[in-house]
Image (tube, rainbow, N blue to C red; front, top):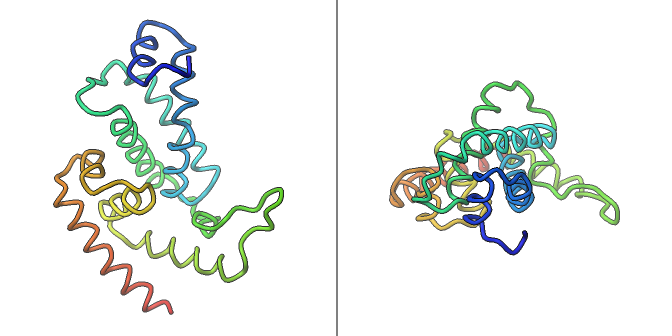
Length: 179
């Protein structure tokens, strides 16, 4: 079933094919998790957010009107879920690993100053207003164009450009102050 596109998997899922829904989840899990991790900065929280996103996806799939790309719609659900989770959660520990290389087999992990840089970067991103943070994460974290980010955030491309411009000014001030 991996050869089917998202729309075909959605149609089969809506028809009751659980395997098709499972394929859809497997296809998009890493992307959802990555966005959730960048937003929350904590691996366990990102896993919870990703799980919540796919529960919502199962509940809301029938409302997907196919007017936008499925990926855009899924990004919107992910960002909204991450915002809600972070707002509700007091968990802020572990954020220094959000933008650092993770330790694992064959990877000794980040150098000590990389942790410090990652911590500062995360603090700087956290200092941004939510709308600016969302624009920055989509454009710089996910490689979206301003137009694509506008579709996800449900705003004009010019608004995304303005948010990025404002975020850069804030981040520059924040990081200069921290150094």
